[in-house]
Length: 268
Ligand code: SF4
Image (cartoon, rainbow, N blue to C red; front, side, top):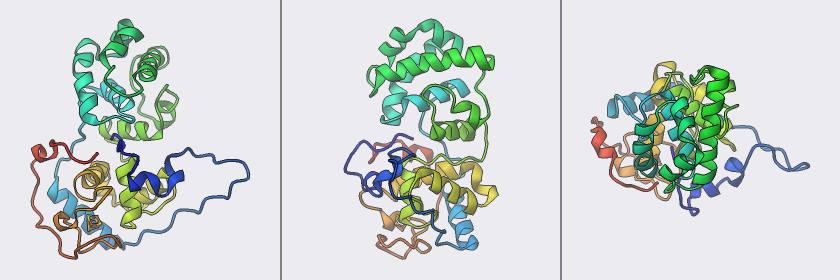
């Protein structure tokens, strides 16, 4: 969920405007609309069938104990690694796992817990403000609606989509830097902005795979179709992939991957 830290990442550089906000300067040339997927429905189905065999129950890598702590963890994960966030949230969530407890803890103490995470001052402010908003406007519960979630301090569309998908099982697609890269690199859902890629993926991914598609794509991007150099020899969709960057047409053997294999440090 955390975007790569390296500014050298091709995914962040190309195309640049994708994560640079949505409005654009007045008078700027309008962006091109999203292009079509390069894959037929049967090919998309086969891609996700293979992902589902490889990782039958994919999990995100942020630790949480309920919808509220997931929301906080995702807010904290912006420009930070999941491992770094988990280290800080373990004691934080032990002390405060509800909006009321978080509010009682206060901004200064929350700041003490998350000091190792980038932008911690701002994030501590947001965590307290969103806890307050949840108590005052939503009865202390995390709303299961994107329009409501994005009204909370520090919560954008991507965060809302992660929470809706992971905590509430909704078939949303949170486009992070990995998913944005894959959508464009292999032509699954090309787009100039995360929202275009999101809409493209929502259109092509079969309903039966939507529940886990977000995690499959993130894990594929993190461990196989990596930013600097895709690791095509270990890719299970190498024969289907239409990327100009791919280095082989031979797919890797389709075997389930133990979740533990995903915990070693890799390119973020
Ligand atoms: S074959 Fe290579 S470029 Fe294509 S999806 Fe697999 S890792 Fe990415």
